[in-house]
Image 1 (cartoon, rainbow, N blue to C red):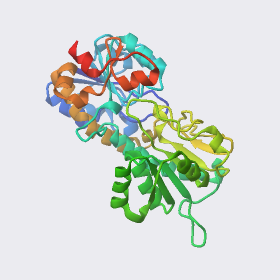
Image 2: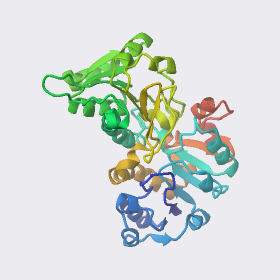
Image 3: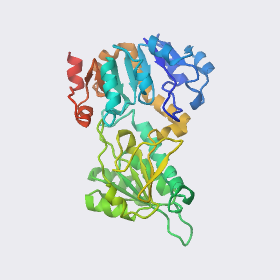
Image 4: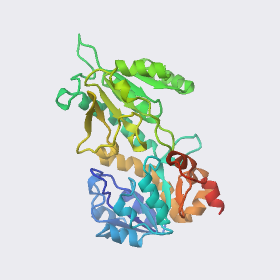
Length: 372
């Protein structure tokens, strides 16, 4: 199979879809790999690094899309990239379609087979291709929130860990999954007083057993969430419904109950955000203010630490890239029901029920698509 990897063009996106190690593995399995010139530079990989493992370098994205059987990326294809997709081509990347009807329409019209990292599952019910970036984003969230809290950035001017005689920041993490767990660990490590809200009693028991007194857990009823948000210096939104739009858990009206200059960090912004006032921002212009509350809603947070993120993502995606290349997408999905869950669009159809529900559009299951 001919695998192509273009340079990411989303603003301030420095990750790359294939590491040199992944390219080496693909070439060793008999596949052709073509990288766009400079694609790996943001993550610290040179064109020569790719040439050394047998990959070819193409000057333009047009060459990549025209020649490749499978396109491997990091972020969802931008409008210019979507116009280059063709019928029968495989796209393997993060898509986050539920809050993005324009992208969905373009992918449906392209006739391409689109497999989304974020809906591939594993035997434990986890999301193995989302988890590495969730870990990175979770660990970044308190760091970015601490920066947002600085007075020069419009925040309350509160130091996460306080100092002797001055109380630390109160940090509320909504969601106790991968993002929330890592966010809570880092915030607690910075000395903040941390509360994690979740509705899963088994998950809260797990967090309590593993982390003990590092942070406290609280059942996420509407009342408890409202009270916690009102007392917080920082609120980190870490809620995910696989494939679907994130639920809106904090309304605009609730902002008036928060401390002036408090910080919101919405890690769920790729799926539409879990605060009613969230809108996607970039690393170049990351924060904005609504009713005195500072919002940090960068849609590709892990891109800020591109080398770490690229290596972590590459470790997770490589086996799936090889399976698709070795077997073809259909046989790979038939052999692995968890990979099949990643099938979001195929031959003009939405093939993930959660994505269809999130968009209010007709959809079939991946299993139905595979049976055709």
